Amino acid sequence: MIFRRAHHVYYYLDIIYNAGTNKFVISQEFTVNSFARQKILSLIDSLGGTGRVFVQTHDFPDPDALASAFALQKLFKARGLNSTICFEGFMERGALKEMCSHLGIEAFRSDEVSMVEKDRVVIVDGCKHNRNVTDLPGEEVAVIDHHEVERPEDVSYCDIRPNYGSTSTIIYDYYLSMDEIPDRNSATAMMIGLLTDTAHLSRGCCREDVEAFAGLWNLADMDYVRHCTSNNLSLEDLSFISDSIGKLKTHENFGFIYLENSCARNLLGIMGDFFLGMKELDFVVLASRHERGISLSARSELRKWNAASIVRTALQGRGSGGGHADMAGGFIPGEVSEDELFNSLKSALFSLNF
Image (cartoon, rainbow, N blue to C red; front, side, top):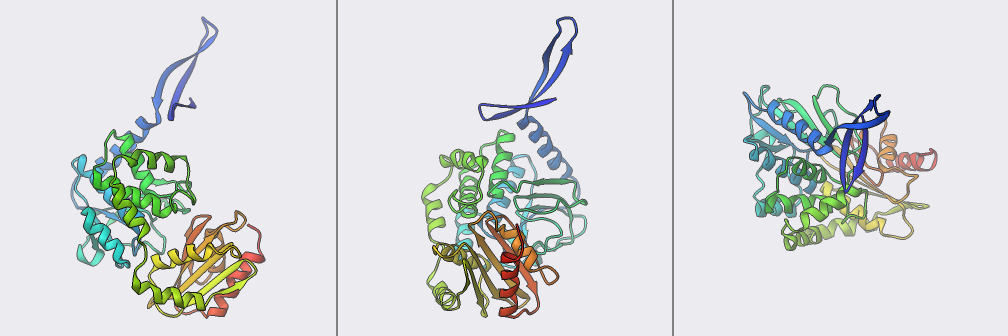
């Protein structure tokens, strides 16, 4: 069997040798979409039966997590499968709540759904065993993610594509494979998730992300997409922004900010993008103390500094981290001083080779 690509469609070809003609001939041809379709249908079939089906996002979800969960829920519904979106934590940003209200995304905190062991769980935009995905009582049967994570051996269906810019792009691929057209709200949600995670296709995206953008363009409410992706800040965020400007530390082209007051994780990322816009900075980390520990958000513009690897190295033995080459997150349970964290990150950046 060999593999070829033509007109943006991938094919598997079965090649056999004909001794009579002394030639190789194509015996069968399958599109990749047919393989993907069978795989998705098998997942849907496995979710049938007793117990409820939950689509779980990572804790404290962001737009891509909720968008991909919502679009997957709609795809399940088109195939006769009901599901409920759930998450641990809460929605930290008012803009995210407004997006859910506008698009009809119903997502529930884990303590609102009373999950039991016989329920089935599909994790999107996160992975089982990651610190930012709470282990809920149900059985995790699937993981759909675009982060750099280790494939869990105890999950039967794993679709992990770290080269993709968003999980929304993966779900859009599912619609293509199933010959389904997403409704307006699903398309709008996926477009918001895609543009948010890729910084309007400027960060960590691949050809499939661009094709998803083109495919969703005529289906989504682009006026609302522009509203959501350009109105990321509120007046109450100004105090955090002002505080972060005053607390910026630098070492060569590395910028670090440690906030004593609890700051929303999504806002940390937004501010990270802002500081990375400084011409003197190529790597930025913002840290914020919470009740449960310290959250980190990292941004990188240099290939030699893989954000996910840097964060994992700096937090080794005291916390966890992950993400992508250009953006990553981390968490430290308990207390770590500002200077200690700053020095750990400097060591990871300037003492090691990536």
